Length: 359
Image (cartoon, rainbow, N blue to C red; front, side, top):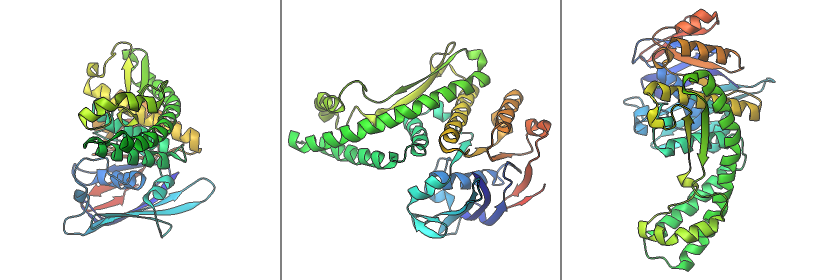
């Protein structure tokens, strides 16, 4: 999977920009605040329909404009090519595939972008919602029926929670308990099946990035005891749910974690170690995607030199060199590890509102 072209209109500081990308290594250099991250953000938007940066959605729109649009040309082995577009105008998100309007989910299935950026440490230290979202993105790309099941579960959860905030009868709750149990059991099974491959890949990546912490372990909590009947779990927790006004057990409470022989709790990790754990997870997810789909996702690394020290930059560059993925990297200058590796990369200079290829 390769992004051969990326086009932006009214995205943050860019009124309009078209860049042709190298199929392997692309490095965007420029001063802080020049807009380098926006280029990675554009690729990420096509893959996730949201930014990896926090903040309200309207900050993506260039000041004075009514909306933004992003276009990407995706090439695949064998010669096939697809034109993908995503735009937001007046609060409405619209997707296009090869010029034709399409559901956003159809667009997201056409491209996969994995990104390591300054906020990635929150994957380890942040709330469980971010880890569920990260896990579900991986499951979405390997389980064809995932989105239908996830939507069914979310619908049942919303309805059940709405009832719990009132004074529902058993007859009111029973139908939603059945739907929640059925969709929830399937969703948990999909996640657990994916997690087997994901956790194996994460442990392998962590061994090379944090050997000083000893043997890593990666665990997954489904949100309820998988050995029990989900319908019985909901029945047993109904009284507590009524008192609290929401569903206390189920896949919406799922979480996963990383521990080490010499750092058994995440609170034992430094910020730098959290970043390396997050990097291992992102690389592992990319590897699982490649194993399942037969092609690597596009991999973005934002501000490599600031996020990783020299030795870990070298480990990352060498690991990426060994895989068949397109890489997009940003920095105020070309990372030393990349320059020392002898890798030939396309170099782009970014200034506020514009970017051009140097090499």
